[in-house]
Image (cartoon, rainbow, N blue to C red; front, side, top):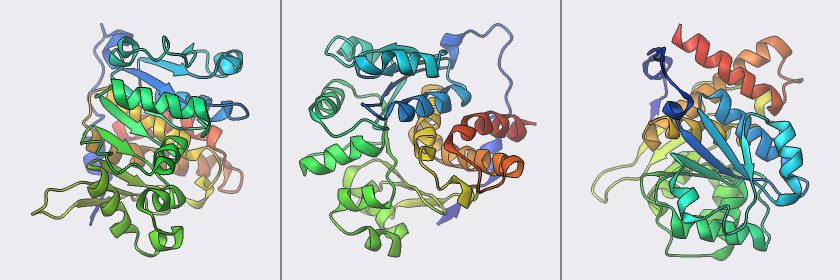
Length: 286
């Protein structure tokens, strides 16, 4: 197991942007998030993606959430969740797509995930309810590939692996490796000492990395939604999925550390983290 270090992550961000750059140069992210009562998850995810540097962020949410989400993150464009909003053409235009935060597990969510997996083969982050939908379907044919990052916490990982959350926590490295191997993707197992695992060929062991940033103040609702947006943002900006996952968990944790210094761990909320992401990127590039 290797540590994710500041030195290697810093090397990804020290290059300055060109003076003549435009928003199209920094990636297009599509986020399929939110459901009734869970608009905040979509907003947090989008703010994470924007603060991580994405040039363009679009949110696909149920029609009833459009006014709430548009007001909550005016920098993003918002679309519905019908067939036209998630058409193959719209999906293909995204440099990266993230799905799951606050999505729910109803028919609309299941249809959105099915449409996404059937019509999109690019860079993808699956979190939260997207993973729960797939676990609930008990499909044995899912093999995402190296362009996909999944970001479960222990409970979601347990459902994906068909074991208990206690078993996941008792063998976190083994669980992360099992997720990466079973689904052929990059697996981010969230929690204290977040792990990133890459699937391996049959004759080689998996790669497992442990994050060295973060603090207990980040154990609050919505933190993972921000992380999903950050990883998708880095992917859309050109990082491969493994690099984006490693950089994402490090910067997300550093954001929490910087904001905890200002606010204390007890008062830290997920809403503080997107600004912390911007501060973390500024600090690490100096």
